[in-house]
Length: 234
Ligand SMILES: Nc1ncnc2c1ncn2[C@@H]1O[C@H](COP(=O)(O)OP(=O)(O)O)[C@@H](O)[C@H]1O
Ligand SMILES: [Mg+2]
Image 1 (cartoon, rainbow, N blue to C red):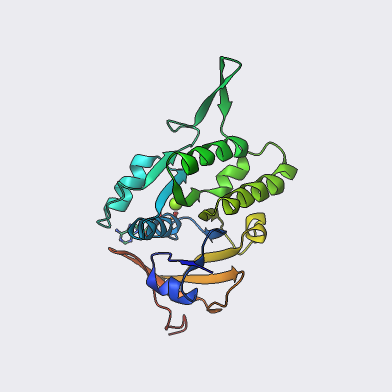
Image 2: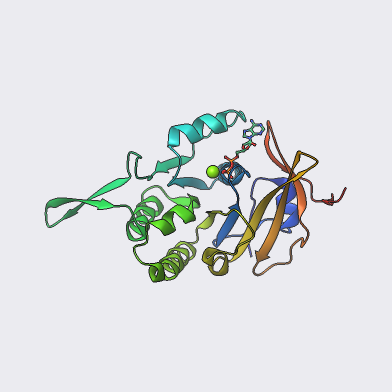
């Protein structure tokens, strides 16, 4: 099975070479834990490997993401960023029905339409959805969530997209997306004597062995660094 690098060498080592290509994964963590940055590492690595990348943002304006990432000296101009937040430029979708124009609130169904366009017109191969938590809030009924997410993930894998679905979490709670995804990577932050300690854990990864231990991680001026030979206790 082909491996897709996450763009963070230490994490790729933990994954025994990277993510298995063409599958959906969940990246979960609290606010400020580095989810957006890790998502960009993944898409930039893809560009380097000749795979087009798409970042679908439901919670942060595209310009802000670009500004934040430029602090790392990254050229993310080759990554497509679509802002589909309710306030964003494309937040309200206008779809033609019988020649009439209709405003439609963004939801999982038209996300599938959007992804279809991206796959066929723009030949995107790697996708980050930020966040699946915001997407779930757009589901009208609780019981739709599981079905909608499952159909989204199956759609992505049928189209051989390697995707990172970002999940916002405050505790250790396991969300429905983690059950459905083929793998989960969790970012964690603890405070020891007032000092912030970041860590990264591969919680689940189907079809491959992986490092079972949580490893230290840092966000530096070069982005995320993972130390796969170090223990958290050191
Ligand atoms: N240039 C930088 N140098 C060091 N740390 C940074 C830099 N830029 C951002 N960070 C850290 O990254 C965090 C934001 O990461 P981000 O990926 O946006 O988090 P999330 O998406 O999980 O909310 C900030 O809270 C800060 O701690
Ligand atoms: Mg973020």
